[in-house]
Each structure stands twice: as structure tokens, then as C-alpha cells.
View (cartoon, rainbow, N blue to C red):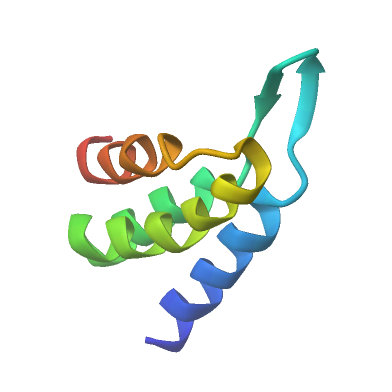
Length: 77
């Protein structure tokens, strides 16, 4: 459980520093930690880690629409 909590914190922190491609297009690197958690613990744990990291996107973008995308990515990929 400590590993998954650390991955969630890393996902949250990594999403705070997006890589800017152009104006309005960013790459969020925190999704990687959700995928690692899903590979290690299954889709539900991956979704929990991705959800924790996705909370940061509300402050970045001003809307919560990235959260379901992060959750689906961790569950399906």
C-alpha cells in the first residue's frame, strides 16, 4: 500500500508541471504513474492512483473533465 500511495503522490506532483507543446497543448506526465500502478495492482488500484493524480488537473485547467479520461486510461490501457 505504501508503494501505491507513493505513486499517487508522484502522479499528483508530476501533473503539476505539464510539458508545454504549444499554446493550449500540454503533456501531463503523471498518467504514467497510474499505468504503473495498474500494471502492479490491477485496474482498480490504477484508477485510484490516476484519480489522485487527476485532481491536480482541476487547478490547471479550471474544469474536471480530465478526471474521467485519466480513470478510463488506467482501467483500459
